[in-house]
Amino acid sequence: MFIDNKKFYGSTTVGEKGQVVLPADLRRDLKVEAGDKLAVLVLKKSGFSGIVMIQTGLLTVILEKFFGGKLAEFIKDKKSTEKVK
Image (tube, rainbow, N blue to C red; front, top):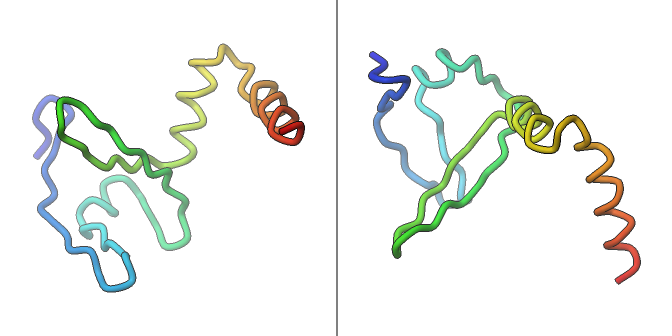
């Protein structure tokens, strides 16, 4: 059940190789399948930290809105700047 667009899916354990299994209900609800790419972000605030995973397709949409449709241009500029270093 979702409450204000939030849902708790339980917990998971980090395996010996650092792998995490996403709960089956979460995979079903978000249509996450084997081989799908997820971006992994870390949020820190007031001494606490958390890990956020977001489907890369959704992250691209969010970044496109943030950069006003100029994400590809930003990435190109960023790559050319990194080569100069």
